[in-house]
Image 1 (cartoon, rainbow, N blue to C red):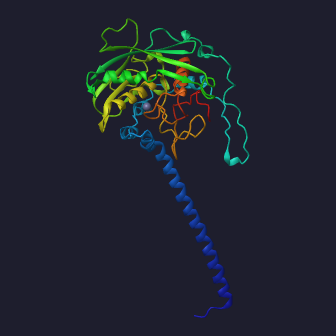
Image 2 (cartoon, protein in one colour):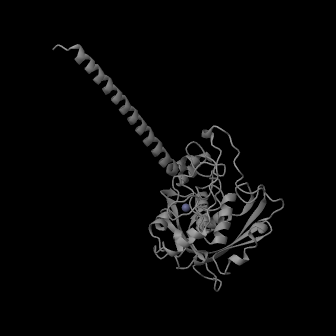
Image 3 (cartoon, helix red, strand yellow):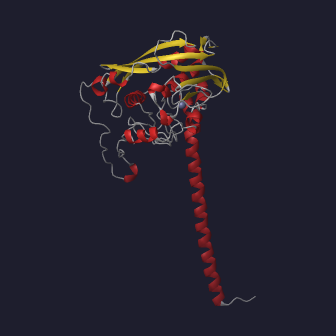
Length: 364
Ligand SMILES: [Zn+2]
């Protein structure tokens, strides 16, 4: 078949057009692939990075632990006893700090970010900032806080039930749980994000433990720590939108979940493989953080900021935070616990459904 010059030009034009379309199409596909890869990395990063993060600490047992962040949230999330009045009250009541501008490498110009907090006031104490907290208690709550100078004291009233006499590495579940609570005790130093820069303060923990309700103080609330000799994720039972310290240990505001009371910790002894004693301690400390009113830090896709440093490539959480995995109690956790106490409101790391970001989170 003969092709005229005119047709040849026409064909050339068509071929050019087709190749442009093909090229654009391939670019679009490449972009889509890249995007979906980035997305799944991000999604996985928040959930599965625990394993990797735990291994940062060097122990395989911790690595296992990280892969099993307790999923206490299913009951918290699925059933919201009060979504209406109490929740909206909380929303209006909790003032969110304005978003803090961050130094952005992308912007090209390096601007100095304003301080996240006013400069430290020399000699200012914990008590100067929060008072002694006596006005925040009814006197019978299962967790009470008080401040004297630069010492914060936590009084914990806990009722152990279930298999608390079972042992791991020679220690009873109850003893391990109490070691977990004691991880909240220590010496801390403030930063520009938490309290005052370089402010030194101490946290003391007093545990008032009873067993199966025996010897309970009259009129005193106790939260239950229910030990289960089986494999499952541990959890703390209360509705995120219904956190109320006065309800801890009572049926008020409790999620109707196997009759567990508000704020009850239900602790299993393994998730897959048996916990080591250290894992039991760390999970207990984490769950107790929920009793204090703190949310989970893992799986939230936290942005990387100076307050929330990147733990490693693609990992988004405060490195080693007890509310993230099996790390340690940070000054930020203490600040969130204090905020929960004075506001009687649940303190989340990010806005996420019913969870409202804590005023203690200032880095972004
Ligand atoms: Zn948790």
